[in-house]
Length: 154
Image: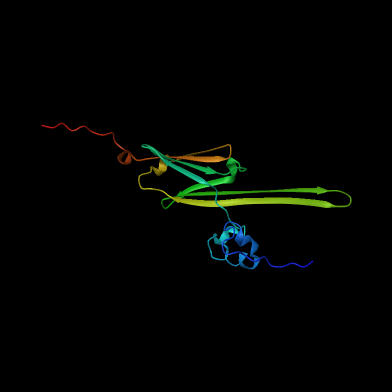
C-alpha cells in the first residue's frame, strides 16, 4: 500500500478542501500572512479581556484577571493614562531520596488606557473581586450629560 496525495475536485467540499492539501495548508495561513499578532506565538505577553461601559455619570471598566490577588496588581495614573500591571510567580519543590521535583509558574501582564479629559483622575476607584478588576472613573461635572431642557415658545 502506498500513500497518494488527494486530488482536489474543482467543486469539492469548499469547507474542508484546504485541509487535504497539506503542501498548501502551512503556506497560506494567518501566521504566515501576519494576521496573527507577533506576540501570539512567543508567549512573552498577553492582555486580559476588557469591558468598558459609559454611563451619564462615569465610566465603568472591568478587566478579567483570574488567579491574581490584590497585592499582585500595580495601578498608576501617569500622563493621562491608567496603567495596570500584574505579576505573579510561584514555585514548589519536593525532595526525596532519589529525586527532586521543582515546579514554577509565572504570569504577568501590562495594560494602559488613555483616559478621556472628562474623567476626574483624583476620584478613580478600583476593586478586585472573583477574578475581575473593576474601575469606576467619575466624570467631571461639566462632562456629565444634562437632562433635556424644555424651551418655552413665546
